[in-house]
Image (cartoon, rainbow, N blue to C red; front, side, top):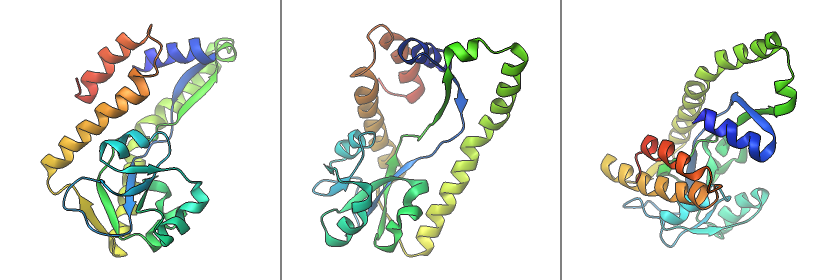
Length: 213
């Protein structure tokens, strides 16, 4: 998949993909009531475009407002909840007014690629390329575990502050809803947008890896 992504980036943007050094999941934080199941029906959720297929698939109504207005919108009742990268929940201080952490989480990693202009990269001496890639390859395996530990710490702290987990009542329900969301996200972000020349290869690699059909 990485080789294919690099090929696409080179063709479409003229950049090469060197790696990724940031990761993270997204949660929906709710302010009103506990939910008996993983269903956001009837709730107004602030979500940015990359979160919207997930929110809609879980039944929520997407509300688009600037991030600086989300806090007061939660306070006033204009919003019932907000989707956010887990790492940013403390920064936006949603925990001051939110009461619930919704599950399943949005199965989308905030994967941030490290890119460079392809012509510049291709023109670098081999020893310089090796120096850069050696450092990237050393750090990359540490990214997921670092952010998973940080995010779990954030969630544990939210629970200590009194927030309750809500949504999916069982592990089976969590997995079932997550699979529906993943399928909707793949359609929205890949099948509906990809260059037809690349789509068969993307589907051949991505769908089996994600466990969707």
